[in-house]
Amino acid sequence: MAQTGFTPIQIYSSSTAAAAPVAGNLTNSTLGSELAINITDGKLFYKDNANAIQVIGWKVVPATAGGTGQTSYAVGDILYANTTTTLAKLADVATGNALISGGVGVAPSWGKIGLTTHVSGTLPVGNGGTGTATTFTAGSVVFAGASGIYSQDNSNFFWDAANIRLGIDTATPACALDVVGGIQTSRTGVTSPAATDGNIFSGTYTPTQVSTNTNVDSVTFSIGQYMRVGATVTVSGQIVIDATTATTDTVVKMSVPIASNFSSTRNLGGDGASITTPFVANTLVFLADTTNDCVEIRLRPTVNTAVTYNFSFMYLVQ
Image 1 (spheres, rainbow, N blue to C red):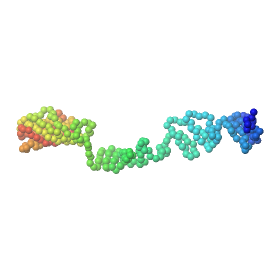
Image 2 (tube, helix red, strand yellow):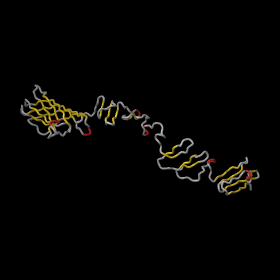
Image 3 (spheres, rainbow, N blue to C red):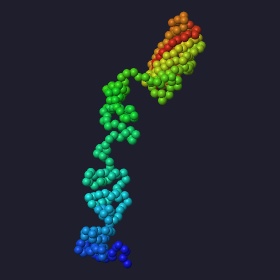
């Protein structure tokens, strides 16, 4: 029984590949219509009310009819338009590749991002970049400027790689560290120097007696000052020596603020003079004690009473 408003249809079949009916092969009227199916191609045809043959069904729907034209895929395949009417598959590739445009009218492809051909703009510091498109000048020491952006000051902060020299306030350093201007260190007040203190600093120390003195009843050490620059240490201070016998060779052994392995008496030198009133013509001579690695103070006092001396000496840290 026919559905109200519709008329019966009749279907013709063909197994010939690519065979399609022409308008004269099919009827369409209020009395009934005819369809044709190609079982090899998987297409179903009809004739519309303008008497044109149309396809109303496909085994594989083409892109022109809203389909893909594809019958199978591999995991990772990407569809793209390879012509104006068809779609193709771009197969997946190894990890780490990116999809790169081939340009207008050209198929895309997988590949590595070229930093000189595919990237534009400036990568900010927060994303691992420099924050600037500036090409740094040879010799510049790069530092974090405003907002962390990489910066340079070539004429005032310069590294001479050929000669291994650093220049501050100069672009032509003449030595390993060439500073035009003053240098200030804040490593002061070192009372127990350690290797980590470096070799430019100052501090205070109270000397102690080392080994045995000669012709001395008593000795009093006051807090002294010292400054180290490189391997040279300069020391100043005050000492009170009470000799046992006047006009007799007298020796005092005194510690140094920074240990040294003296190899010669010439590794240390200095002098001192009496400040006790009435002034007595007493002077001190300083040299290195290579046995005890300390200061040896020599004098020949004119009195056998306590005399105060101011002194200064320098020595080599070895």
